[in-house]
Image 1 (tube, rainbow, N blue to C red):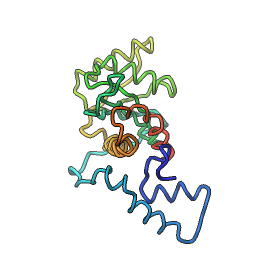
Image 2 (spheres, rainbow, N blue to C red):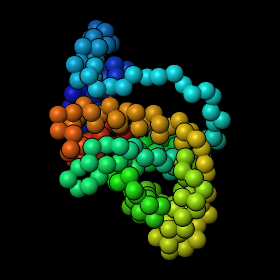
Image 3 (cartoon, rainbow, N blue to C red):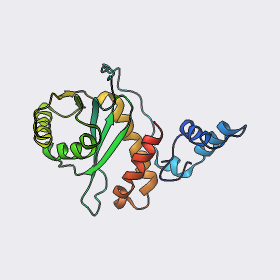
Length: 205
């Protein structure tokens, strides 16, 4: 429940939620807290939470799943045999469901649109808006490329937000912790753990 790649070394609260789906005992919460506190891999690899960067202006809550998607990149990862050194992180702002796609730090707006199409549009349809911390030129090219892939002009807005509403930032931090735990001893194959990481993130929603 904790060290399995499909679990992703969750914190004690999530661990209790996962265990309670199948088991229960009187000291479950205490045992979970002690187990996580003494997990050597977690102590080695999990980033310390820093202070917040001040209040963010909250974005409106979407009305339906996959109506609004936050998009961000995890960069500066060890380069894999496939040439990947980054991850495109796509988060549904309502349900918090996540899709992950390996990519490169030189990923263009057009390449990003293709990854977004394959991982979001193919499964959930075209969202009404995409939230990103990228500049206006990148967002404009992304929108144009996505329209070409869809085959029509779509009513999509690509809003700028400094920290992608804070949502993908939290997901990125958790993903980084997971990849360090999964691939700490073999960092050049982190991309092979992305599917398990995506499952673990979505299983905890």
